[in-house]
Image 1: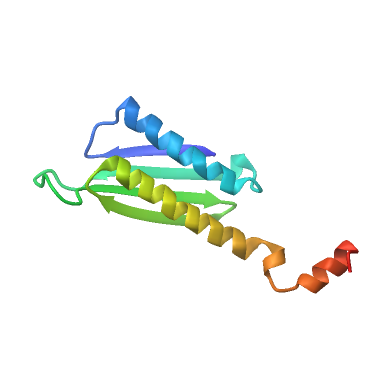
Image 2 (image 1 turned 90 degrees about the vertical axis):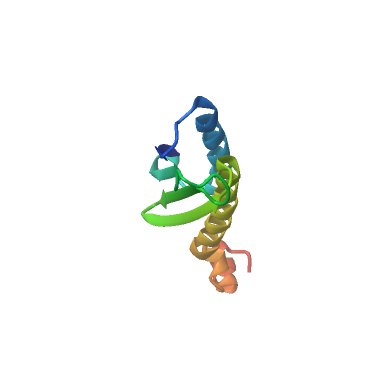
Length: 120
């Protein structure tokens, strides 16, 4: 998986970079069937406002391109690490939905597939 990180309105530290990379590495096991070179993840972490100190001031966004299909998740929160965790959790759900749609055994043609495999 190719990972592009973008920071807007806050400093990019080594700690937050490694945290995002480790969190996004969890998603690779859900994309085992896809060639790793065809997966592109664009992650943006931003501080929306500088004049607020409390509340949802951080914004995390992940755009994942899997074989030409774009999966997108956005989250806002009060802590950048919580935003990243929430984005990863939501992206897991999006990937599972994408895999369920694209798998042939989920299309409702179970009997035809068994015949093709010679197991009927």
